[in-house]
Image (cartoon, rainbow, N blue to C red; front, side, top):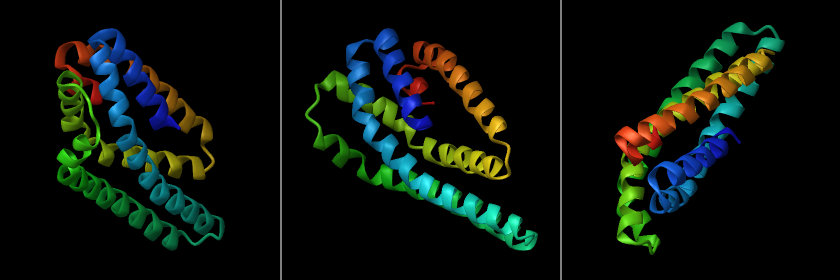
Length: 168
């Protein structure tokens, strides 16, 4: 849900700061962001739940092993997504019939987004671990804070760096 909200922010900011072509470009990117969030969610939700179960059983050694497995799996999945996105770039854009200006904006966004899945997955994993420990309010505070920071930075970076700044 958070990734969708951030994508919506990118769409609104791109439309107001960069124009209609930029807004259309963020719409093209929505599918990749959803794909990335889905696969990151599978690993992060599963591992955090298993860690919570192990802690509940007071099996802290197993919980630590599961945390390490989740962390390494999240990193590996982020790297694999980056590699996949590098390999499918031209095929992905060939699927859409966009104007040259829209495709240019989307490619600019894409070139920076390539490296986001790793960070997005790690953030989701750590948030799920914190929430599974019973600190839901801390997780929500982090989301609210990052949401606010994302709005401000999206405006500033899209003005200075273009669509690449928006993807950050």
